[in-house]
Length: 221
Image (spheres, rainbow, N blue to C red):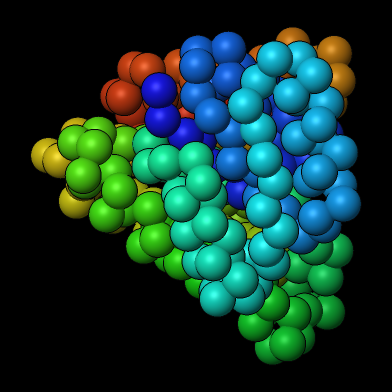
């Protein structure tokens, strides 16, 4: 089996994605900013019987992200599945008229430069394998812009456009690109947005390889 790289690996959704794909035999490359937290999560997953290792990187730093993915490939083999689901920072969630150009710069680095860097880094390996899956995870503003969260609304629009183009461009190469939209908050016990349920949805998207965009639940209002 090959490797899944989970960008934004934490104790919530990232950990459940790791468990779901790990049950299918994938090695787990965990990527987020804190090496200490990654090591703790990797140890927990190893205790559960999974092959997991953490690689620290900041998605707003293309060089560090590319290096982390390269190290994962060197140690764990080709990356067949990439998920991109880091949590947006608070400054990206300001109302429109309070959002500055600086805020947007960070949001664009987070939601456009990061995904482009990650995909560019793993694409050659997927092509070598002859298969691959890239799954983007976004909040509701990725599909319905909101003036209450201007940074993510603007940057997610770019991420969504990039992901859609990838979906169209790579389909003939057996590389599936999809986007999971999660309206509202991820919530333990929720029938639609519990991390385990979302991880199962992402596994289904990897398996089914059909629609580009999947909604975890309907929008309210």
